[in-house]
Image 1: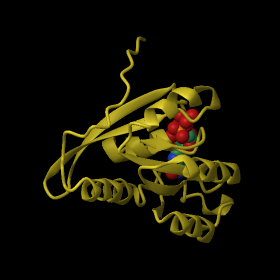
Image 2: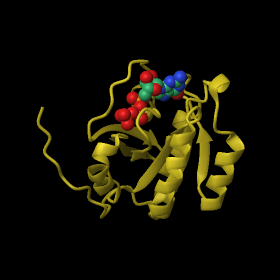
Image 3: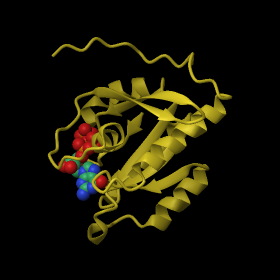
Image 4: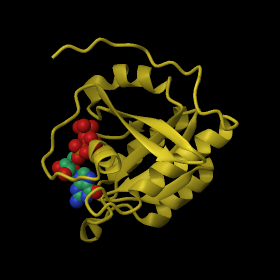
Length: 173
Ligand SMILES: Nc1nc2c(ncn2[C@@H]2O[C@H](COP(=O)(O)OP(=O)(O)OP(=O)(O)O)[C@@H](O)[C@H]2O)c(=O)[nH]1
């Protein structure tokens, strides 16, 4: 499950990972959504990737979902300091396997969060850190695969039958 401020690029990361595509238009996610991709990690496994809305008004609902996740990808935007601060608050409350991503690393000229700061934060929490770009596709596959691998390792290689059931919601258009 991906968590982070509105506009940091969570949906774009999922679209790059699942469809190998990128779009500059910004359509803010409403509440929650998911996509599936099969990957080869010691045999085929199916990853269900959940996208959450970054907007504050959906926080109560998205928080209920993240409690059921097997792994969490915390995303900030390297050009937006506030998104990096907010990620640090999320980190305090997360108990499952997680990963830190500094997205939009193709925008080096507008960088506000230094790689070293994020690296230090990730080390402090004992988690992995990558800088990614959905635009150039840098590190996107690597990031998702490394978290999937860590989850598999932690669950003793079990590929299905987890007890972390997500709450069910009926969505109507
Ligand atoms: N340059 C650049 N732009 C990006 C990148 N990833 C996303 N964007 C742009 O950032 C904007 C927001 O991306 P989204 O993926 O919709 O952001 P989000 O985090 O899902 O936003 P919410 O759904 O509101 O929570 C879009 O205009 C994207 O095109 C990236 O790696 N590089």
